Image 1 (cartoon, rainbow, N blue to C red):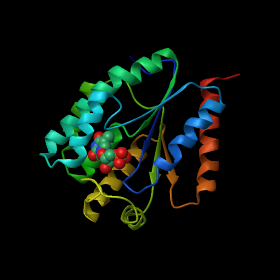
Image 2: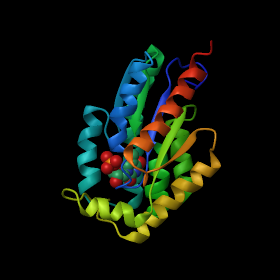
Image 3: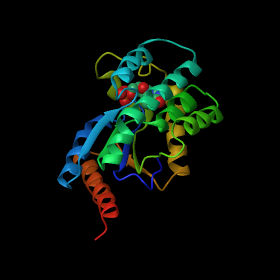
Image 4: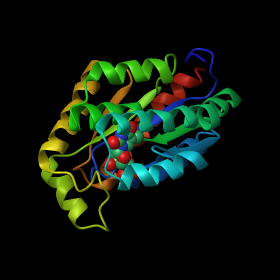
Amino acid sequence: MTNNIKKGKFLTFEGIDGAGKSTHIAYVAELLRQHGKQVISSREPGGTALGEKLRELLLQEKMHLETEALLMFAVRREHIAQVIEPALERGDWVISDRFSDASFAYQGGGRKLALDKLNALEQWVHPDLQPDMTLLFDVPLEVARARLDATRELDKFEQEKTDFFAGTRAEYLRRAAEFPERFRIIDSTRPIPEIRAHLDTLIAQLCADADPL
Ligand code: TMP
């Protein structure tokens, strides 16, 4: 399926752990519903029954960095086949809490897996599908760290050191510069009402582009 024959729109949320993206997903889903859209909200790794089982392993077990990348894309293949493509074909809008940009940022920027391997996996798993809009919630590392330290038990990724997140954030920002047509950077240090106002504008614009008068 290519982006030009699908009927719904595909939105992804990205950012390093502690960037605060999760707070805003329900808000955006509700905004879209107010714009009259049917919305499916999902996440990666996960999104399907099999994907949620693999998520447990991915977030807890240590493994070779290539195993980790392959599993992330295996989860994604299932997610696309079972959830994303059928929803887009129905004309629903899909929000995914993370997608392939996270593999480039975490396995590439964080773990230093060669980007050509990630590009090959992306070409295999979704050669014709890209998000219509990717919201990148960006914060300095120390802000993200403070938020993580103030929260619950940390998973395998959240326990990573500053160097890992420096690489992750840098790769997210590099991709945002490479694909400016779909990335929107949200300054996640701003107060929630200000971020919501920014989201209101972005979503109104996307809906207007989707349904021109
Ligand atoms: P979450 O905490 O946003 O639910 O994401 C789960 C973790 O999985 C997060 O630390 C980022 C990581 N991750 C990757 O390393 N590669 C990927 O491709 C995806 C989707 C997530």
